Amino acid sequence: MQNRLTIKDIARLSGVGKSTVSRVLNNESGVSQRTRERVEAVMDQNSFSPSRSARAMRGQSDKVVAIIVTRLDSLSENLAVQTMLPVFYEQGYDPIMMESKFSGKMVEEHLGMLQRRNIDGVVLFGFTGIDEATLGPWQSSLVLLARDAAGFASVCYDDEGAIITLMQNLYDSGHRHISYLGVPHSDVTTGQRRHDAYLAFCKQHALPVVASLPGLSMKQGYEQVASVLTPQTTALVCATDTLALGASKYLQEQRIDSLQLASVGNTPLMKFLHPEIITVDPGYADSGRQAATQLIEQINGRSEPRQIIIPATLS
Image (cartoon, rainbow, N blue to C red; front, side):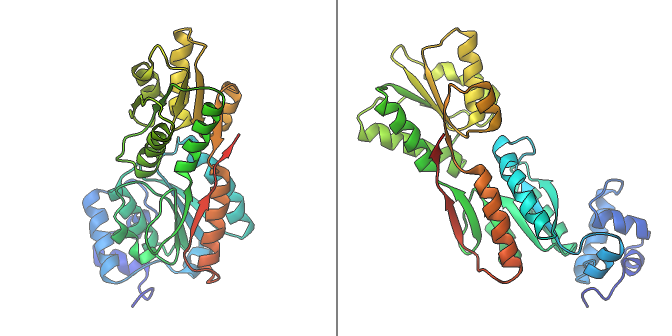
């Protein structure tokens, strides 16, 4: 029965007007939650999704992909998106942007809406807590970025390698008291893997461990950096550029200029404001290109889902 019903049919079965059905399809405001759920239930019961020809008649592209970021203000994710877009445009795909805010529920809602709209494929910036069962229907047309999942295509960063590269650089420069500012282990990649790499390096080289795992934001870096500073500390490794930016502001205010900062990110903002900070590029830009290329290959049946690891490089 799929695609045999029209929007007019869905409106009649739902007891609403065609414009209301259209707003639901396009995820627009102006529809109560109760009405939206009723219309979506009717569409689900009838396996309805707008046809490609209908989209074309409305002047929309016949090739549409979605990019679901965790945060629209993420420096690292924006770098990946910037290199993703030209790849999609070059191949005639129109990308739409969505935000998950680290909510598994929101990812589920987004994917449900995208399935009803017959979207060709999805690049999903992953995070700890995503229900892999939710991703099931998209196995052949989804690429996870920054996380992996069995059976799904993914583009991941070498989180351990990024931290080891920074620690080795500092160690080779004579630093023996290196503190660490990171992310809680509830985040497996940026949090646990990067922190574990710091701990492993310290153990291997008999270095004292001084660490705090406040979170991702600049404010958390600013507020928590004092907790990892000892009279012996000569260097500080930050798991992300945002933490380093916050830490740097605190150090400037306290007129502490003898501490060597290092961070994972190498974002343009960091390079512009603080060229003195040692940074590792985890490959954010390369990951965007690779994710877009992999998704297009899968959509067109030229590739099976595969895992891609982006190597980290010292900037």
